[in-house]
Image 1 (cartoon, helix red, strand yellow):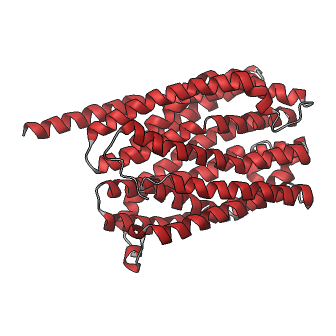
Image 2 (cartoon, helix red, strand yellow; image 1 turned 60 degrees about the vertical axis):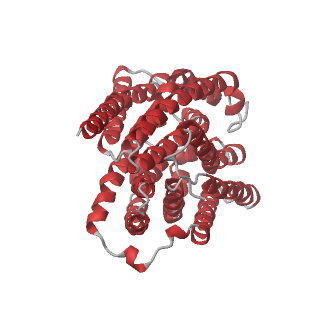
Image 3 (tube, one colour; image 1 turned 90 degrees about the horizontal axis):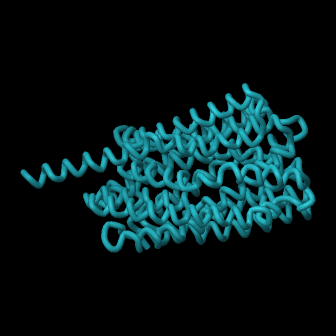
Length: 451
């Protein structure tokens, strides 16, 4: 059930890990995807806009939790690669303690400031109540979201990307069924979509927990593993906090863009939301390659196999570029039919808004894919600060574009250009620092060999 990525063909190992991770990302997208489809088709454009306008906030909140848990899992992967299972179990236990503390604070804060945050984002009056109701339920269920992210991250750290996929398939199907029951049958509205998401995520978290308890005996935790260990907490926070900040800084940039889009009205909000859902779906492969890279690099770094790291990153870069070209072609030839999954074909203005977004950004997918490669490679090496700075560069680029657009009186299309600008800017610190780390490590290895 574990997967040792420190031996064997890097391409074969990377693809074997990436494909289940990619399918898992696809099914994870179905949570918001099905919510958006049901809301747009059976409640109305305002409901689609309400749920769609939460994407950036969800990315901020879920991204923070995902960053924290992924950062903690890097240390688990490194200790697994080094075959130090006692230390690995201690990392897992201390990670659980830290996650619980974060979730309690986040839930209380987000529920308290729900409406003020939406006001700051220029949420239109006609959708703000629906948006706030949807978010309140999502925030109240953060503990199940964090539980799944943490448990799935541990499984992936041990090289198992298939089990989280199976659990996501179950929960995605359940989410779709509950959406139909709550919204179409019981007419609960956007709150029904939120309840469906939380319940489905809770099921996936429970499945993960039961599976780990029954199948992964090397993860059997004792009370000794949960002892307070402040140096280990500091070590975990040292990699987890920068990764969480990197997600959150990136999300803050998307919130700024969402706030600018909100000023154009519900039609553009709905088009932007539909385009965002579709883009998240087609670019999920980049996230999967990134998660694979973090585990692959983490395990090989723990095992001291530097040459395998270089080869794996090089092979993954080629696969990402091929995937990016394929995704561009999908958007170019099948964009309109895919957009109409979310909205009726008669909504021509909404369709045109989504089409305008894709014309502006899709050419930049190779840069987007490369971000996930180098960011996760550095995180697998245990470096969190520079990946976080990549997020800072993204934030700066998005903010600059939005500010210029507002000052010069440009419109929706120019606002969408903030995404390509951000993706290119993020690579400015990532690629040079990764190459520097590779050269530095190579020199250190050669120096040891000469001695």
